[in-house]
Length: 620
Image (cartoon, rainbow, N blue to C red; front, side, top):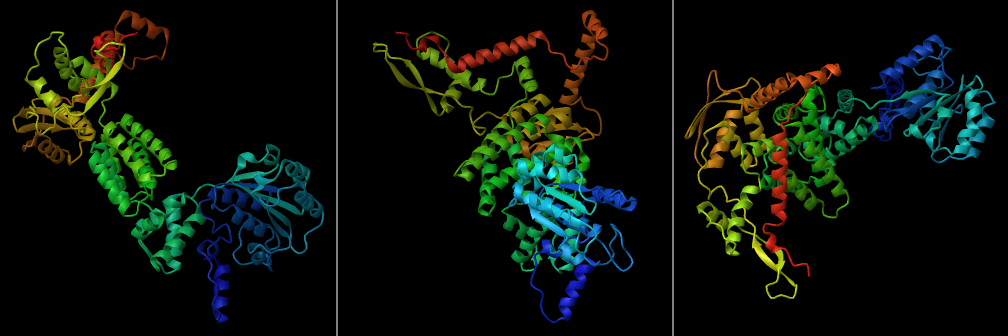
């Protein structure tokens, strides 16, 4: 609390009359540049200008709401007119209230004119200012005009102000404030000294809120301060208004839970749990978690926004691990976010980010936000385990079945046999797949009765058998382990196996591996739990002290490096590299792989549309 405010409070107390309640944003409004937080560059510039006598004729203050534009304008007016028994010139240092200070800070000084341009936009209002500037101040040193939201002035008003602004009388100063600096004409900006007031950093804002809470004798949790600072988005006024509301909500004690309920926020830890559930491809678990948060009072739109915010945090931590030092990030958030940043690929995070942005847009235009949020989570859960283009190319090259190809191949053979076009009888696996096929897909086929008509025929669309009915998987290699994770839609575990596990020995019910130095400490335990869940039997995963083959990522990197070396040694490629200094080979793709991948993809698409040309309708 500043000295002026303390004097007012004491005087009020000594008078025996209770002072009317003032909101925190007004009660703790800065009275000097020493009280202003988060704007050190501007304060430094103004301090040097006042000390050297290089005081500008006009200032333009711009920034988002609540960062101190109007307050700074009043402090500037106070500094320009500061006067005591010993100080008779403008100064930034104001250790005690001056002759004009209280009237200026309360907005009632005759020589400091404040005008709201939002309600005084016309040329007539500017003409009134122009007519008054010729007269000297009544009692202060300078006549100061503070025009708030100056971008709201009309073009005629701006043009009328230009001449006075360029050559004002020596006793007149202008201070403009705006949140829309791009709407201010460049001719006005060129006549002003501009200051961009920054958003206040979270650490500074939290310390400021804690200081005020101590002065108000309010107990407030650290997590509650983080939530308020994050919701304020760098605005001091917004943060104080939120804390004022939180104090009233909690009856003098502010908890993180109370702030979440007040703002309709979801628990940040539960948001991380929901994110991990989505990355594991568990759509049912994600829906359950969303419904529980909804029952607890969380807004579905805010849940989606929090998921997007955490996705951004995880992506940022991948490249800037030092971001965990941000005061607005809790230790749990930093620890779990850093672990996820090492497991998830940028491609996956980018895809999730785009899907969440689309979901947020959908929620703004729907009347059923919970259902829209649930549909978005289902899409994300199913997209989390989609193979990357590199993995898809590898599957095609190695002859593995594509995600939908294995399910659709067996019934096609059975269908051809039923139509009398020959073909061998379906084997046991095909029979099992056909028996497990559920929903039927209507197809438009030619009518057997002639007339060129068409009828709808229900054709079975096969699905992969549930894990419980399938035969017990045989895990004899690291590739088979990765394939099992892919089949179970667990992208987190699939990435961890490829990146951190060096295979040593595979036996029924037992796997011996070596780990890289970057492997998470819980990887082995998580893998054993997943294997038990996936196969229905318990597996022992032990860690060898040394040895082990390279990880799959290391193997792919070595293979890629070998291909690049071979390409660099090719005479034609070497000639190209020599012709373009600084050029380098970043990747090598064999022509046969591209052609095979394209051919297989085209065939799969054709099969999805038409499995038998004879089923097409006649062109009568």
